[in-house]
Amino acid sequence: MTVSAEPEVNVELYSRSGFGGPFTTIVRAQYLPDFTRAEGSYLPRRFQTWELADEAFAGAHALPVPILKGDGLAIEVNRLSGPPAHAVKNVAADELHFVIDGGGELDTMAGVLQVRAGDFVRIPRGIAYRWNSVTAPIDEIVVTTSSEITVDPQNAPGTFNPDLHLDVATPHGRPGGPVDGEYEVVFRHGDELTSYFFDYDPLPCLDVKGAPPVVRINIEHVHGLAVDDGGLQPARLFGSVSGRDLLFGINSRRSDRPPVHHNVDYDEIICYAAGPTPWGGVDTPGTVTWVPKGVLHQGPEEDVHPGYKAWLLETRVDMTATPAGLGIAQIMETNQYGVHPSNEQSAVSV
Ligand SMILES: [Fe+2]
Image 1 (cartoon, rainbow, N blue to C red):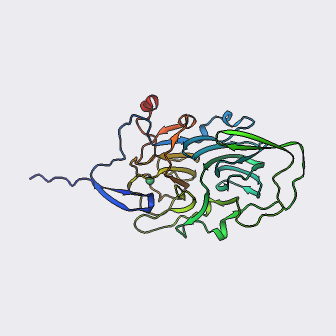
Image 2 (image 1 turned 180 degrees about the horizontal axis):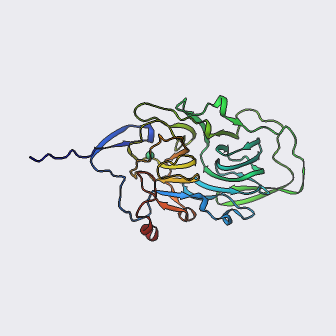
Image 3 (image 1 turned 60 degrees about the vertical axis):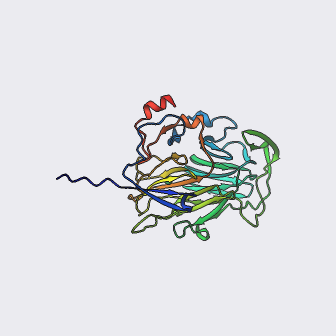
């Protein structure tokens, strides 16, 4: 008598609006994240941001380098070995800086912050800022969005506690004095720059009242919550007024591995921020993974020890890798987020 083997069972989650639902589960024998190869440009990728050449950041007015771009949204990489001579004012986008490495004193029109690794710093549009000092070389990811970035802690207690861990830039409490030569403020307006010059320091303020424009949280205050069974909604940290962008802390945590899922409404961009434990195929801080909408994926186990730190940007914007981004990217497999085996051949043809 022949006994037929039970088929392998894979449970896929098909959800609309990301974690917002409605949810559908589809049971299938095949494991669809495994594709043999792909032709075209709509591909999941891993970006090794540390591989951008120093020269990309060396010009007098060098700006962060975009690796992913979409309508009004960009993921940029920045590297600073010392303080630039000028301030920057982005008049077209809010900026969310995430410091992977390094730190220093960030001066802004709304106060001063001592910045360190693991910090998210929101600098809204129209607020000029300048690094007063760089105490250790800075590597950072900058999310720029034409929408307004909101501080939006949800899914407590996993998210940060704003009463304890939301830091506000400290007003200078002094006037801005004269400067040697000129003080330059570079306005970013889209892809163009315009410089304004002053014979005094325009940044210091005497006081700030009302809603603080420049705020900071550190990723260490996103907690690794534990659940005994099932999944767990990650900790939301920031959003945008448009509703199209959501940023979550996804540090390691005790939870079931994510199911295979179809996230058809959001591109998923993850930054592996710190170890010591690898997250599946990702083990280097500064690795950015990108899964475009509708590309089936599972993603690595999150329940690892002693752990790692990471964050996830979900966006309804259709993102595209820039030429600079493609230069430091590899095609990614969507099981463990390692380098896809077809990468060598596909990298040549794509
Ligand atoms: Fe996902």
